[in-house]
Length: 146
Ligand code: DQA
View 1: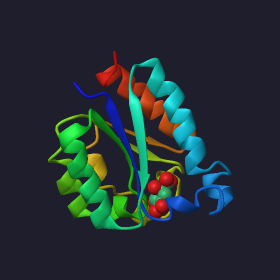
View 2: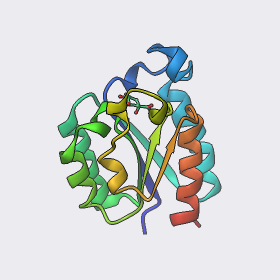
View 3: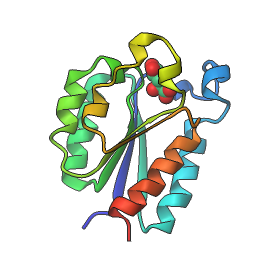
């Protein structure tokens, strides 16, 4: 049994901490990775945080998770609202999928209100800032941890 949780991040999230800090805050993806690692350890899990600006790369990582992942935490960025391909890829994964958004997408433009990924995800966290990732990891602990 694998204990690996993929933490997948989509476009522009490499700029987390620098990009629109009034919306996304000052923490970076490295901070997110460190926070998730602490929670993951509590549950005997291991997090693998990855980020890409390319849809196909995210799909390849989802396929990789099919082989060796226990769960997927995903913030697909803007692909959330556009990507049937990421939705299809997530549907090939058998473990739990949790969707995270740093901002409260429902308080923002109407094009951010629809998520393809939510049609697949077991749970969604939005508007909890970067803390949402650690909360999602805690939930992963309940779902697949020891
Ligand atoms: C986001 C929300 C998306 O609408 C946006 O395109 C992002 C980040 C979030 O984490 O709040 O890039 O997923």
